[in-house]
Image (cartoon, rainbow, N blue to C red):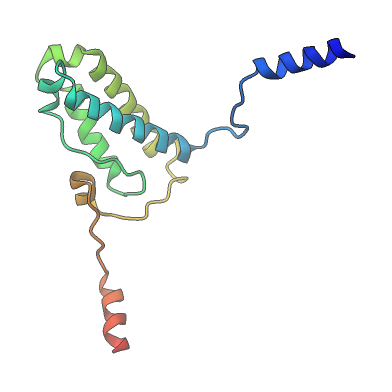
Length: 146
């Protein structure tokens, strides 16, 4: 009895705990966007890739923004066609290219109908600040309440 209990205890201590649910398109897009943002921060601060980062556009990835696919396409174009060949071959830039390609594919093809876009603020992706824009209908309702 003790041997079976010890074996069972060893089995459960050796098996790592993991999430039971498989990753969804939404969770994968969120994870990839945070990975890309941390990688971009590293590229902008690391002394070997700081010169390469001068060409990259400023982007604040928000998978809830409808403009994200256009901005990712622009970033991917710049990374693929970087003016410096040595920058294109740096491991962090190659890693960035792969991650951006994966996120772009997930958003535009694999999970096209699964993602819900809450905003259409392209300036928020460039600046990182979202400015709430009230539509004309909302403004009209506010004026009628007075």
